[in-house]
Image 1 (spheres, helix red, strand yellow):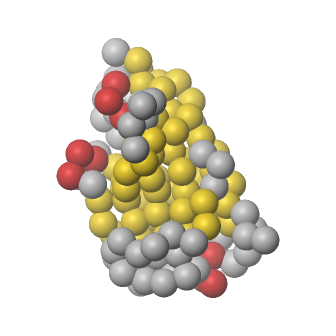
Image 2: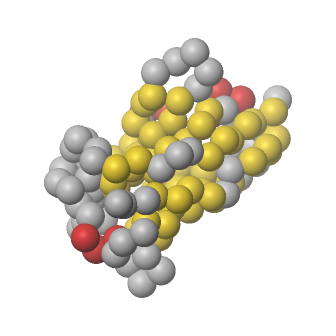
Image 3: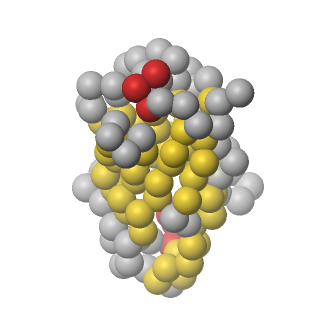
Length: 120
């Protein structure tokens, strides 16, 4: 059973930064595209960023220039560096992993999520 464990969420003021981490139970090299999604209260889950096995990244328009997704095979971890945070970034952030590739593949595995709250 594949598990994805997120960490790094919390409360931050607008304009601040947070670093989210995702550590899978298996080797990160066994996955194709990995990424981050978020779900705000009362809204659907949306893509935030994905990163392919070849380290090509894809971002939602709302986070371009502020968020950076990276993948460290040596540390077996995927990261989401979030800068210049806004109150509208408040959501539960989920790590996801696909067996396939490409910028927006079907995600086969999901973490339980970590809450990010941005105060104004």
